[in-house]
Length: 361
Image 1 (cartoon, rainbow, N blue to C red):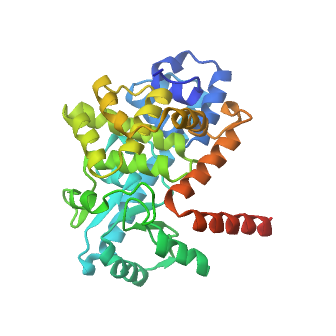
Image 2 (image 1 turned 60 degrees about the horizontal axis):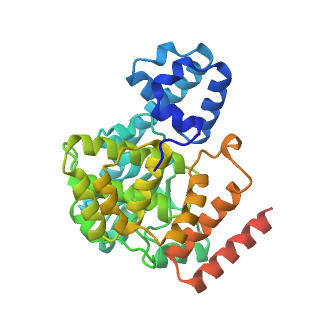
C-alpha cells in the first residue's frame, strides 16, 4: 500500500514539519481543506506539539489559533455536559459508556486534541433504554424527529433512539443501545463490548470502551453508516487511536485483530487499516495487515470500494474532488443504508427521503 495521498490536508497532518516552508498560496489550500474536513484545530494542535505554531506566517496562524481556541472551549463544554448527563441519570444507576469524541476527551486521549464536537454519544444497556430516556426528559432533554415514520425507523430498526436536545442549552445527545443496528448485515456483539467497558477514574458510573473496542466502534461508524461529511476527520481519529494505543502496548495489534473477529467487526477493521494507511500513512505491521485480511471483501468488490472510499474520504472540498466524487459519496450513502436494513425497507426509506427532499425544495 502507498503512503499519504496527494491531499494537502493529509500531508499537513502527517508531515507537519514541512508546513514551515509553505507559501501563502499553499497555506490557502491547506486552511480551506482542513476547515472543510473539520481538522483545522487538530492541525493547530499538532503544530503546537511540534513547537512550530509560532513559525507559521501570521495570516494562516490566525486561522489556526482561532480554530484551536474553539476546539479547546468545546472540549471544556463537553466535560460540563457529560457531568450534567451523569447527574440526570444518577437515580437510574445505569452505567454510561461514552462514545467517540466525548470518550476521547474525558479519557484524555490524544484524539481529543483539536477535535470539534457536534453532539455527545452514549451507550447504555438496551433493557434500560426507557429509564434513561425518561430520566433525560425530566432533566430538560426533548426528543427530535417527531414524524411517526422517523420514530418507528429509529425505535424499531436502529441502534439508537432519535437524538435528544436540551431545551435550554441546546446541546444534543445521541443515546445508543447497540454498536450496530438491529437489522444490520454486519452486526457487532454489542453486549461483549459493553461488558468490557472500562470505568473512568474519578467519575462515578462513567465508562469508555476498551481500547480495541474504541477503535472498532470508530471504524464501524465510519465504514458502515454511509454518512461521510466528517469522514476525513473520523479517519484521522482512527489513525491517532491506532498510533497511541500501539505505542502504549506492544500486544495491542494482536488483541485488536482478534477482537474484531470475536465481535463480528473484521470487515470495518480491514477498511480502517487499508484507508488510514493509504490516506494518512498510518504504520501498520505487515503481520497485522495479514491477520486483518480475514475481513477483506473479494477482489472485484475491493477495487470498487477503493474507487469509492479513496474519493469520499477526502476533505469535502472542491480542490480534492473530481467528477466522480459526488457519485462515490451517493453510492456509499446507499450502501450504508443497504447494510443496515432489509431491501424492501431500504427502497421505501430512500423513496420517502427523496420525496421529502423534493417537497422541501
